[in-house]
Image (spheres, rainbow, N blue to C red):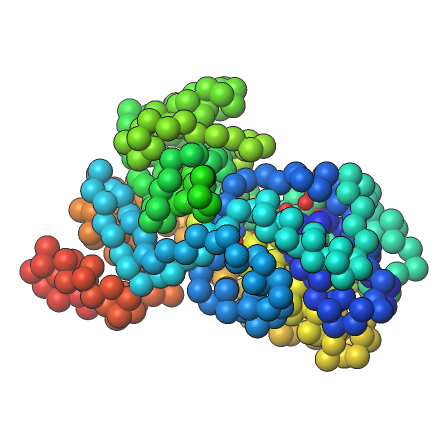
Length: 379
Ligand SMILES: Cc1cc2nc3c(=O)[nH]c(=O)nc-3n(C[C@H](O)[C@H](O)[C@H](O)COP(=O)(O)OP(=O)(O)OC[C@H]3O[C@@H](n4cnc5c(N)ncnc54)[C@H](O)[C@@H]3O)c2cc1C
């Protein structure tokens, strides 16, 4: 098969890798507009189920990819300055740039062609290909250009985000809620390497404007946010890596493919960064599409028809959870009065995926603390 892929992010590269593994005779060509060493953001987290999926799908890549991971159990919710630890969730943290380098290395070793600093303006960049994969990210200009093919919807959500990093090593995955005269600021922070932590800052648009972040240059914005989270950072500065303030978007597409062109990863569907699963979703899309093509003996029409049948239920389920998570963060002002333990319970219950019984199984000590505080059993 001759395959053209637009976008060398996790979705495009992992799909290229899996297809080459399935059949080394496939001719696969990826175009990526950025240079090989470019990546926005800092680290990523992967929950245990995501790791199992990746280990099953390509053990060789998985081993390299996970070699330098930082793996820790549990997280902390920081509310009113009180740290509430909750055990039971294992997270692997990896550097986003290292993941992309590993993907690039494995792709090149298996014979995938990657053209860096090469931008595709449209799918006609790949004429006479059996399959064209559009994996050009959340803003996907190609999806927008062919809205009549895919029927996309793009819903821009309210809260503002900046994907910062820091040299402060924040070991438990921490969700930090800080309030000042301008409003509420949320830090999503975790160590992902021996030297760095991710520090995503989120706030509602009113707090953002009152703080003047809408008018600040990057250096001022970093300084302001480092001030808000001074106690958590121990005075260590925040760092930026092409980090502009942005709004998350909920992307959906009525049709996942048109003719021999298929959407993959964030171009296809987004989830909220707070559930830490966009990359996982992108990689699972790649796995599902590669499997669908394998099962159809590389009959592209049959494979593309099967892809949403197998992948859409899981994808929709995650997106729904992501939307509930978005709403919880957007409305967090209404529950800031809760004491730290009740607040932490509300966080864990926000997507509806975790019951109190799950919470009890996950961390009986946390539940005991909750029950002691209320002098009543958790439902
Ligand atoms: C603040 C924040 C925190 C996050 N944290 C996590 C996390 O902890 N865990 C997690 O799993 N996910 C996380 N994500 C989500 C994750 O980054 C994305 O879901 C993931 O990168 C999607 O992969 P992708 O390949 O679909 O798109 P992208 O990674 O966006 O890759 C698309 C690629 O296409 C290229 N491109 C675009 N247009 C063209 C063109 N016309 N021609 C050539 N190349 C083009 C781009 O340069 C880019 O390299 C986070 C996202 C944000 C914003």
